[in-house]
Every structure is written in structure tokens, then in C-alpha cells.
Length: 170
Image (cartoon, rainbow, N blue to C red; front, side):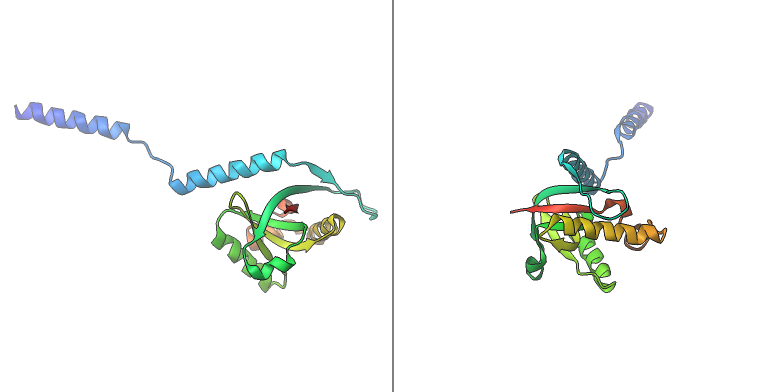
């Protein structure tokens, strides 16, 4: 009888052990869902080519339209229609940390939040699209001329080629 109980308990433990699968953390699921939404949004946004008078060929600049609001009231006056975005982060503390590091380097940084809860780290804001495109191009050329296109990723954890222009919708 003891052997039967022992075998029954052992079989039960084997069934329970085989059915347990590692589960993704809730954080990872939320993060992947947010990234998927952002990829879908960026794919649906039109891309505009802005030409300037420089001798170099025009660079294709991604312009996305979003409703964004400044995270801090002190940034409200600086947030204009066309914004050069250096990073998009889903966690506020990470966006604040990047903002702090960029400000320590002498940049004027604005944090804005879109309707999906993504934080946009903005390094320049203008009323004119061509000025925003020129600033984005300036940042791009500054680092590519130095041959240091990995500068932003190395120093700030931001992919260099992810600079884009946000057109603010009101």
C-alpha cells in the first residue's frame, strides 16, 4: 500500500513538474507590447524628404505627427511645433535620467509624453520644419564627420540613427 501511495505521489509530481513552463515577466510583456505599438505607428507615419541648399545630397528625415504634452510645466514654453527627438522611452525615470545627462552636457532638453505614454526626449524645438530638419542634420553631420556615429549609443544608450522629427499636433 505504501508503494502505491509513493508511486501515486511521484506520478503527480512528475505531471506538475512537466506542466510548469517559465513565464515572461509582466514587465517584458508590457515592454514588448509598447515597442510593437511604436513600430506600427512609425510604419504608418509618412516620411518626408527635406532638401536644403547644401552641396550634400538631401537626407531622408522621418517626420511623425503626434499629440504630445510637456512632462514639466517649465518645458511648456519651449515645446513648439517641430521637435528633434533623440530618444523615445517608455519608462519616465529613464527619460529623466537621459534628460539630466544631456543637460549636463549643455543641451536644452524637453520631455514630452504622447497619448500612448511614451516619453519623447527632445533636444531642439522650432516652429519651422526646415529649422528642425537642419538641426537634426547638424547633429547627424557633427558626429558622422568625426566618424563617431556610435557616440550617442555609447554615451547615452541612444541609437544614433534614431534621430527624427516630431510634428506636434494640438
